[in-house]
Length: 491
Ligand SMILES: Cc1ncc(COP(=O)(O)O)c(C=O)c1O
Image (cartoon, rainbow, N blue to C red; front, side, top):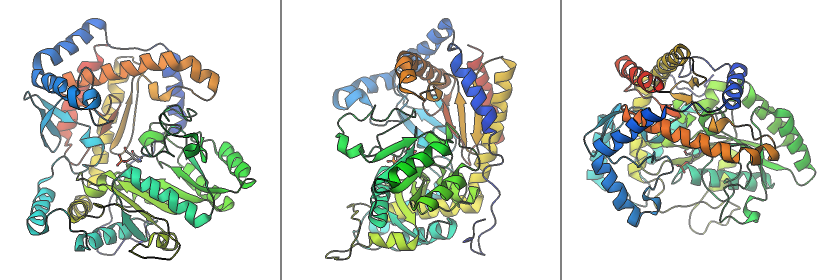
């Protein structure tokens, strides 16, 4: 499928052993959100909070201190912060240790980028060597910029050229600008509930579909005036939007997380992306795959190779720099990418992007060596098998305990839905208003679950998502399953 795979690259085994049965999943989501929440028993929750009080004193003290100088005491939107954030001192492979010396299985993996496991020694050594030689930044061309770009261009079917950016958010901003410059059109359709970073134009329909400007505080209406959202898997609705737009100047691009909004929290059907490709071709819109999460977790060719669908533009981040800073890039077809040609005094028509620290040698070397290692070790497939093992075990526990929860995975991206807050039906405005209070309760339950997992030695992403890595051996997964079972028995 990966037409550009070079002959000296070993054929990798599939990172996704099986695409979830989406019909069955949506029936189970529906059942989960139609029944009252099933949180932990109150006495058990008290024990969980005791853990934090008794065993995490240093974290607690630091969290208090942080609140004086950092708004809310946390700088990271992934941050697990109920009842307070844990301060971490050490990470290695599949584990992390907090400031009080408590050890956890690390299923946050920094929010996704460390597919090799945290703080991978070989990559760290290469980064050290680079720092000795030229420091983190020069402002001029460095060989690792070229090496990283060549590696990505070889691996990803839709990437002929690559431009590094400072983050996934910046790359999305740049890609949308590029799509508008190339097509001469301005409207952009995103799939509702998807996360594409926090730029003015993309804080729209975040987390829950149909929520439009709900989170767009501080963003002028004009900034989101040409952003539209449409429900995942509803191709007829997307077609209607494209038709409507055609009468008003057209659609520049459809942007999609190819596994479905929020890293596949609401999974798309297996042929959804191929259908989007057809629609984009029919309506002369560009197809943008936001592969910030799927980029390299779905395999070296990303979700585009997995689905056999070539987007016009690709957004990369996270794994691109192996967990090191400044993870972001726009990739795409040569003809489109050439509109980014930079340089002082350029007079050609171009889409302006920039950044003092973009494409620095540190990020590029880290990314190059991490991706080489991901390729050599077949890390996406191995992490994917760990994800399968974890999901199967979770399904068995859920069934044994007679709980309404839902576990599913796409390789190394594992979802464990207990409160269903991300799955609420917001298909019309009335439902949305009615659900506001319920959403709050379900969100709190998710926080409680996250805290309970942590008190049992498991760090997850916000209590509902789990990223596996190459470091997750069968022994790590089986240990984790015992801990998950201990928590789920407390319901
Ligand atoms: C799919 C997707 N796109 C874009 C972003 C934004 O990337 P960054 O946090 O690097 O700005 C994220 C971050 O989680 C993401 O998951």
